[in-house]
Amino acid sequence: MRMTFRWFGEGNDTVPLGYMKQIPGVEGIVWSLHDVAAGEEWPMERILEVKAQAEQAGLHIDVVESVNVHEDIKLGLPSRDVYIDNYKKTIEKLGKAGVKVICYNFMPIFDWLRTDLHKEMGDGATALFYENSRIADADPFQLVEEINANSALTMPGWEPERLQHLTKLFEAYQGVTEDHLWENLRYFLQEIIPVAAKNGIRMAIHPDDPPWPVFGLPRIMTGQENFRKFLKLYDSPYNGITLCSGSLGANPGNDIIAMIHEFADRIPFAHIRNVRVFDNGDFIETSHRTQDGSVDIAGIVRAYHEIGFTGYARPDHGRHIWDEQCRPGYGLYDRALGIMYLWGLWDAHRDTEASRGKKEANV
Ligand SMILES: [Mn+2]
Image (tube, rainbow, N blue to C red; front, top):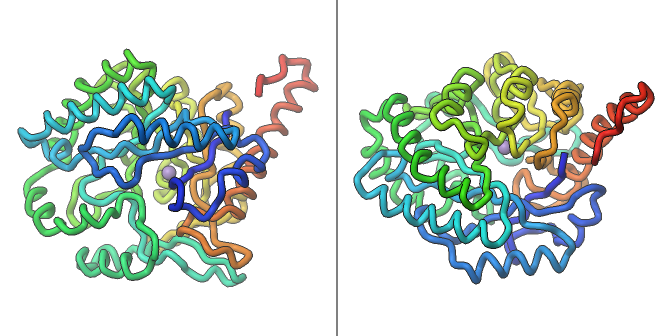
């Protein structure tokens, strides 16, 4: 398991790179060019600029999250080919810069979705919260306004230029079914995976968050059966999954441990975090500790250890604790605590194996 930490870029993140390096075992950043719109080709000088900034702090840039997929690709419009060409050129450039994994998602219009970015947890901490009934009944346009008013920073997947065209987008998705989305995803994979393979980059699709349809829009990266179908769409080690325990864990029916075992060699990137799911379908992002949420984080780390996981991992999100002022979900303190919890679980298994006389895992 190779530990990483998300960084939103110079002047766009409250956590300095030097602090990330001080968290035990963190070796690289998970990064993106957040100001480059989906569908645009990434400029090489900007890529190299991030590489230089990271390397100066002793961190690598092996994992990119995300190179966003233009809506026309998800919609299967004729204009998609231009955007797919740009995507390929970006893959080639990232390969030249030494990138190994690209995380992306295939969710129509919205990226991840929450109703409250600072839900009180009762102990002074706050966290990201999803209120099921508010999404079920909500006017999406009103929700977007609220989210924008709530945060001083741009949210990933909530770039203002995308939200401006919301009405048009909802119209464009009228009549787009899950089958259409599968077909458009297959087209995309057939174009980009060979380019990724040639450049030594493993593509890793992120599950939908939450893993069910919202506002009548189809969502397909939702669980084990659909991931099985996805991996067969293009059977290659370069076509893989970002296994996010937090996104998938919002549906208690998802057996994440079973997915780790079934998809072992197709998981280049792991997001490991916990959520507490309530009976009414609401969920809140908790600490990483197994007992604090509904997801068996201890069992998940054990499963990664059992498959000899050598991919990248990140603690994904954290709560907001100790009065930290930070981007929602992306403070230093709780993510650092999460990393130490994950290492504790991981190393406990290593020691168990060593005492049994097995070969010590290579960390
Ligand atoms: Mn995630």
